[in-house]
Length: 82
Image (cartoon, rainbow, N blue to C red):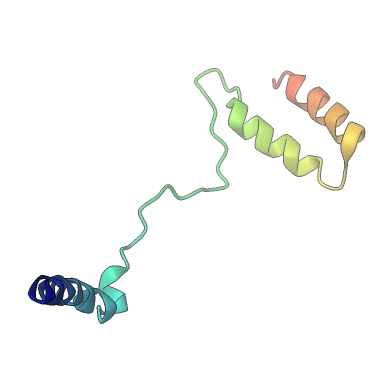
């Protein structure tokens, strides 16, 4: 029983030691993700995408709260862009 316990303990230490002393820079991977830009996308007819429209309205609604913001956003999002 002692031999089995010693072997298990040695295996755990053998596995854990390299992880504990790993170089931090090797463990960190570069983040690959989408880069958000301030560009506004439009389709072929010149209309804003819904996401861009939402962004613009939210930026304009800065400082408004509660029912005032809700009413503003509803009106802003329902406007037709020429």
